[in-house]
Length: 546
Ligand code: NAP
Image (cartoon, rainbow, N blue to C red; front, side):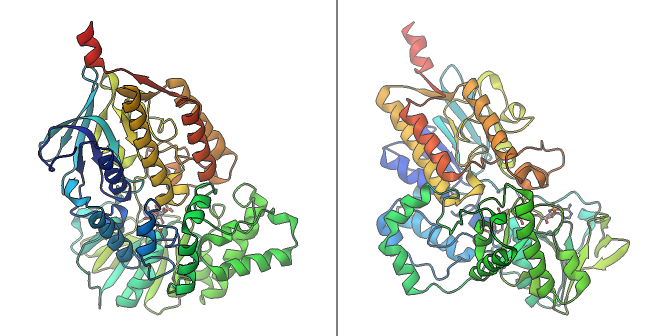
């Protein structure tokens, strides 16, 4: 059984990260009697929701669905105050889970894992932390999230700036008071679009620097009603089961009809209804919006129409209208009053599409040949997604091969769970799994269960090592790309494609074949004897027996 944290240099499992994946891993593996060391770089639990504390941060998956399903009493007891949860409520939930299941005692906070090497002779991982500790483990699990390495672009003069800078993904823990300030926000992805309306209310003046206009749909958020909550809680088990086999891991109203099969009037009616319902429901208005360009164009045109109706200044409205990518092929943004914010007198939109920000100065920045002065600059510039955090740890598998080197042309995984030559190393919601293309809570629970069950499978059969075969991995990598290529997704310069990081290989990183379909594939592999994986005996014992 596990002992007190910090006391064991040799354990069954090292887990990196105490976000939602890490917490559930601790719960499951500890219950099975495994000894653990868990390292978390923050000083609290919650992962993404620990770091992204920017004003307006909110989840765009409904609260009743963006929560753990593993414990019936937990899901019955917990009350979400709103239909779409704000970051503080999700963080409170993560803390509640950590306390309720007594998980905190396993976690070493403010400790980053810096390296992990697979010792082939011993069949064990040697893990090092930034505190200089070395730990040996049979299993090594990266539960580090998909969007956890914040990215500030390399703009000339950044270090000369005398004001305050913030990144939405590394927001200070104490409240930042922007009252009376002139603020710049750089970036109009999900984070910027959520932060801008809230910052605009507080600041004296807000300037938004937009490189690419994004499609944003209104959340139409509301206070949770007892009726809605009760409806879910009365039927939670069945609904959770159903969610698991849906395309996005959540219950949504998906219309199984192609967009062009109905009249223009009917299409407008459907889009209008879904706009009023809120959230990402508009993307489920027809079954081919993310596959067929012409169909997609109808939804994109509707959203542009809504923007033009909302934003009073026609020139600003036009700049806010996305025109360079199909709707939904960059992560759809969900907002509360984003477009309306541009009708405020204290908000200005600056287009930096044609020429990037020239440089940052001591007092502001220069863009389009114009000098701006700011008290604070907020970078809403995104993340080195999916691979950035994995590469921040010097992970080396068989033959001292670095993960970064193996993946130089893009991530190579089998099912997004493991990579060949890295035995007993698992990734939770790794590249090549649906991860960010669905309800993350649903996907991470599936992965934690898969990993735990695989470890139990090995224990039952006396295996020491698990690793995908090269063939299975090659086939899966091809399948992930072929599946993406059947959609419109590769047409956008998105972080899904690695396009936001200079020099990053351009290919679609998540698996877009559907959350439910993916779960079925995983189940089929297990049922057919873990097809595509190979299991080996303990190399140290084998050597001793010779
Ligand atoms: P993002 O989607 O990558 O957006 C980054 C923004 O910064 C883009 O507008 C990008 O422009 C801009 N940018 C980057 N480098 C720039 C530069 N050098 N100069 C000017 N602009 C630059 O990042 P994010 O908004 O943090 O969102 C990341 C993901 O986190 C989301 O897609 C979503 O999955 C998740 N998230 C979810 C929620 C939610 O649940 N509601 C909220 C926040 C975030 P380009 O588009 O031109 O690259």
